[in-house]
Amino acid sequence: MPATAMAFDGVTKQFGDFTAVDNLNFAIPEGCIFGFLGGNGAGKTTSLRMALDILSPTSGRIEVMGKEPSRENAAEIGFLPEERGLYKKMSVLDTIIYFAQLKQMEAAPAKSAAMALLERLELADWAKSPIEKLSKGMAQKVQVATALVNSPKLLMLDEPFSGLDPVNQAMLEDLIAESARNGATVIFSTHVMQHAERLCDRLLMLARGKKAFDGTQDEARAALPSRLALTAKADPSALPGVERTHAGESHDGWTRYEVELQQGIEPDALLEHCTANGVPLRSFDVQVPSLHETFIHFVGADEEIER
Ligand SMILES: Nc1ncnc2c1ncn2[C@@H]1O[C@H](COP(=O)(O)OP(=O)(O)O)[C@@H](O)[C@H]1O
Ligand SMILES: [Mg+2]
Image (cartoon, rainbow, N blue to C red; front, side):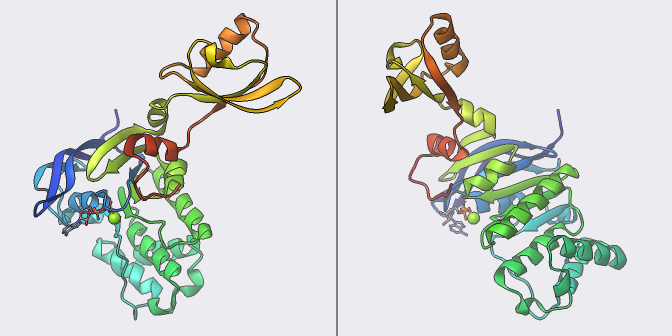
């Protein structure tokens, strides 16, 4: 069992009468990429802020790398806040070095780490420019660099992809994957499923402050009934394990059917039945649900999220 990077135990946060985070329980193993998924107002930012000791829980316990949340852990944590903000007159390089020194790095290694990150983020030519000369996306990449400069063991990124164009989103995805390969635990929040789908080992789905799911992507998918598309001569409704079918196009006596299996029935079982009983089939394609579909299953379709 890997050690635990972060654990929430019955954590609730109230703002006055309003419950923003409601009795959350989950644990994040060290070294994984973990996604906080949820629509607007689901409680993602509030949860991250409690883990950073910016806010205190109303009740429950949080552990971050085996300790209570405390600002003193800041040197081991890289944080990208949801509201971005850097000092406009400072140069790109000085900004990153400044944050590195706040995290107790010496000047020389801070400078070389900052330059390496700027190369990586394709901003090396801008090292001497003041922040105010940068586009919004470029400034955001600089802010990502301030979170990464001391190679923290734990990275917490609040909506890191918002405000970036697709090219820079892909660059950031690579950087997150690379940080995890180098041993960091990465926690990020998003309302865009595709980033989570490509990156996350494990996820937490939040709905109005409550946990709707936590676990791996495979575990999330396994909760949905299996679906497949097959081409057959007759409607497969009556075959064992079939919940419902939908007929599509027909051609030369063959019809394409969308088939949903009963909960817990695997596509292999249906294929074996067809083979053993001589049911003629011309194609048999298992359809893997997207993370977006699992999100709708656990959280509902009303939340403001993107695929
Ligand atoms: N300081 C605060 N005072 C009152 N309500 C707050 C405060 N911070 C957050 N909230 C409310 O808590 C809920 C969760 O917010 P937040 O954690 O920012 O959600 P998310 O990051 O998932 O969009 C929202 O309804 C938000 O309006
Ligand atoms: Mg938020």
